[in-house]
Length: 603
Image: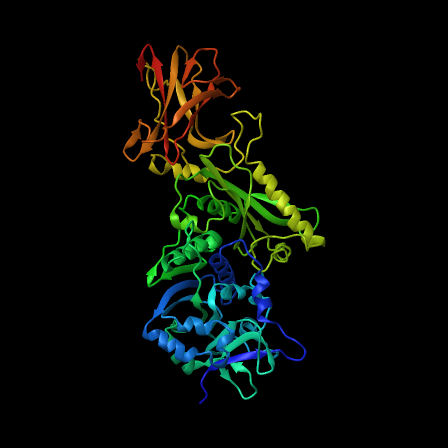
């Protein structure tokens, strides 16, 4: 029985694709290589989900191979006579090296024929990933492109080598396949010119490398410590040999395995958060990151202060709300936009910050196709007050998705118009203008009044600020039911609360507002407003150490009159409806109270 070995591809007389060109197909992305890897592999895994399945499992594991295990790898994957022409031999000679394994389950695996050029009814996933270059997945609303996306795997491998272990259906029977593939440099050997592409497998009589199958494949995977498959699971493991972990932020040193795991977890949170959120029937992707046997927590997009506004905005779009990107010609409806304003975090979690596409408060729109994988974060104008931020989402409609698809480069990280024409150009170009205009509308223009109606949805902020407050969801502060004037019956109260305290944007800054209505005969006293930090036990009047507390700014009537004080003098001539406005302290819930002041006595 022949043993698996490396086979190197010669240039054919009619030409061929050199490995150097394949590696360059991703261009020079601005994103971290690990982030590019996460985006590309996760998208291909989502596209490969089994028909009708709404949830898949996706994991990335980093582990160091040491000691006797290194010897097993050297024995099984010895490059032999081509050792000088790609980097695997150098990696295997080390005392230790890192494996990065990308796995999915609940997917179809890499099925179809194992040789190119055969026409079958099966989806040719295996040959498109392992042998061919640039084949797009034939999947409605899919986004992955095997030939380009797989270049990201080699981009983080110092050995130029990836092992592919997959379980798929072949003639309606589960089949395990194992093959190695490498992209080195083109070279000359014994009078022949080689492309630099190599495969590790069983070399058939016709001099073509094929995967190791079934029981033998299972045995080899066990010897190499590769993941197993449970029950009737299908899926794929992509094992990057000699993973390059990148450089630690702000430090002139390489990342540790744990830091690389954290970077992967951060990338998953930023670019796959629509799939990580449970929208009612569980998350679409259950993702796991393991570093040296320890699970790295992925930031929760629903509660992370930077990501939460984007999650809320997508929730608005999923409820068929938000602004429509309407066109006068087909596709008539090409997308929808929603935005959510929130208090900006004073501190960002270390893992969240690692792959963050921006610094400081959010003032961005997460643009995505209908499949709900984030393409990019388009910046918009900043809110004037650094206490506030906004996260917006633009999502393409299903009928317009194809036009945005053709605008994406191989890395799927932008919508580029310079090569487009016709309808695609119009849709993508005009969507950018539409999003820019909607974000501009979030920031008040100079000269607008302080009482202008907010132009961004603020319900989520109010809910988050109200977490320590009594009362129903959505309150932005608290107000006791006001009592009557001294000497009066509580049945004839001098004022009533029309709307409970809520957060609003006023001239670009978040403010807590509460509206009251005076009784028709109310006069001869003052109303005094006070603001404090709400706590589980009540209120905290003192400002936080090193910071400022909430402050009452002014009163404004429904007729536009403004009183720049915390005190409103009530006479028979004043308006009947007033709103008290207070500036909250950062990262706190604000309690807003109104009391009657009369002849030196507060009620």
